[in-house]
Image (tube, rainbow over all chains, first blue to last red; front, side):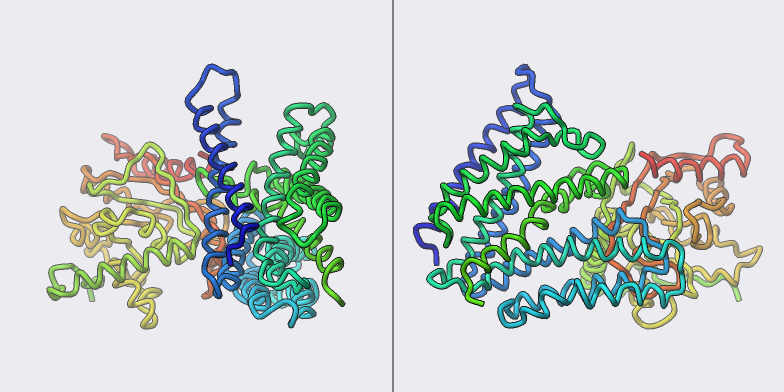
Length: 320
Length: 221
């Protein structure tokens, strides 16, 4: 199951992580080089999150025949935790309690159960369970609780949380059941490629913004996101994606194009979640979790990029 | 009938029970921590086995379990929550849980002048146990912390050596609100604050206000 391509991809990532980790530690203990310590701290926290991501994904891949199920379970747990963070920071009322119970205990596990059973087999249910059935169920259940105050607003918040944290993210493990001719048994590498590019894009946009950033896109929402960072990030992510074409079923140009789309969607995700955070007046979704950025802060770009990546790949390679 | 307390003093346990009980109590603590997503902060205070009174705001039936589960296991083993008897005696599951987290169950309907809950608590904790209590009396539905009942004052007056540790519990009322029986697994936050004592000659109301402010202050730290 671990062929040369997978090994090179994973090995390359491990090498980069090792370099980044030692760099982070060096920066941490050399104080007189004029870099903001908060920045170094953020960098080190992000690297730690990557190690965690990498270890969990690698462990899930290594389980052999059970690896697909294990990977889906990992994404289920991430979704569940992200949804906890989302709803925790969203003011809900007592009347939403029963609806929330359904959201957490029924709809979230059910969506991932469908992914386990196979998105190719249960494709229709996979795509409508949350956007249609949960969409209709939530307002009805809230209405039955009898509290009409700010009704539409409360319902919309629960729906948004479920869509972003669960529905959109579930497209990432769904990549594992894409039936691409000539690429059977290698979907795990495609998923790894996707997660890698999204994470790289986050960093590249940040780095370009720090280096060249002049024109801030929306100062009220995120003072660190600039047009220069955005464009630099998209360009360099596309280059890296193209250079990694051998890990995917794409040719070089397709890989570059899809990477550009991933970069744009990743940016959109980060921007959207920043807007929500600003509205709630917090820095991180993990505010209630001491000492960590939230899970949602790490996966916001994945949530936005996953459905588009899935659909593009499917459109290009899977016969209808 | 005098004020009734659950007879769970460890001396009554059979020899093989403590270890199995330790296991179930650890298990219960882990489940409570996972379910409530509780993160724990200690501000100007460290976990310790000295005799303490943890007093907290009361917003959910989960408060006592989650606060108890937030303590490190060696402290937890020596800490007993005071809980409402009519709630924790209802049904086998609750009874089992109350026994597992070693609760002192107090019948709020049956409080007599000569058998005050304060005396019962002091009798139960002896020179060994710490106690968790909720001086607001009943759970409040609003965000505001209600005025404290006087029990904390008399406890401090009769046992001035006890450390009084304010604790603020956030968001648990959304995990399990009043009148609901199924919890929604959101995240919560338990904050332990610096210990305080009853000052020499401090009036009852002044002390209770100060204690309430000590809990309230932790919310914004």
